[in-house]
Length: 147
View 1: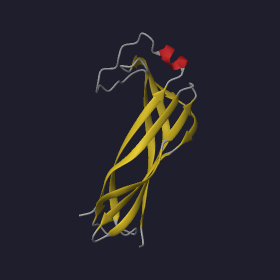
View 2: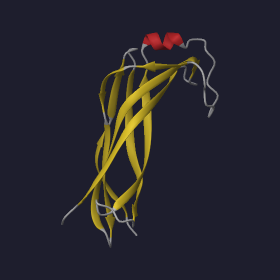
View 3: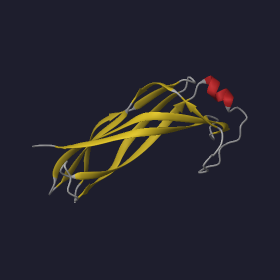
C-alpha cells in the first residue's frame, strides 16, 4: 500500500481584487490514491486536496457589510452576491512525493489558479468581514521519479 512520504514544495497563492481586498490562499494534498485503470499516463492518481483562504478586506469592503447580519454557519446564502474582478493573481502550489512498493516513487504537483471571486454584501462573517467565495481551476500532474 502506497502513501504520501514528503512535502517537497509549498507556494501560497495571492489575489488582489478590484475592491482593494487581498486574499491569500493555500492548497494542501491530503491523500493520493492510485487507480489500476489503464491510462496513457501510466498510473492514474485520485488526489484529495484541501484549500483555505485568508481575506484581508479593504476598508471600503468592510463598510459595505457594517451592521449587516452574521451569516448563519453552514447556510448557503442565495442572494447578495457580487462578482469581484481579480486584478493580480498567483497560483497556490504544493508538490508531494508518493511512494508505493509496487508502483515506485512519484512526484505529484497540485496547482490551484483562482478563476473567479464573489463577495456577499448582505451578510458578514462572525469576525465582521465580507463573505468571499473563490472558484478555482485545479491542475494536477505527476511524474515517476527514477532512482
